[in-house]
Image 1 (tube, rainbow, N blue to C red):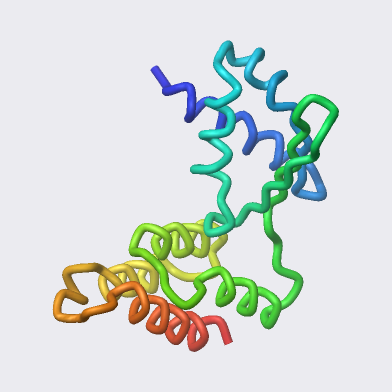
Image 2 (cartoon, rainbow, N blue to C red):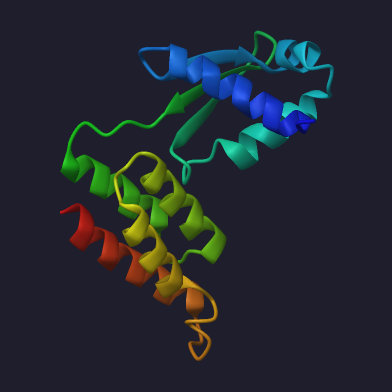
Length: 151
């Protein structure tokens, strides 16, 4: 039996895949009623499964019962894609957030499975054991690697 979080995520993804604009508008309370869960469960799914690192933008519209816009990020050209990815990495990045970005790039076939595995090993905490600021180095390395691959 699927967990409620997985069910909600799949439902939202199905909605996004049906839309040409790769954008959906949901009412948090209506969605919670549909799945017989608390609205906080919807928030949990949105904040953990539909993050910028995973290729989504969430906008909350005030009023109207908690309207939320979910957009799947699409890249119009190579330079824009690289710029958006590099800005999402920032000056410092955890291994978990780096993996989220890599998962998104692999899922969208922006990088190959081999590239994904090589980068993942390179950025692993065990690889960076003797480094004082792992997250800063990880950010610099990921930016450099992706600049070479995506340019």
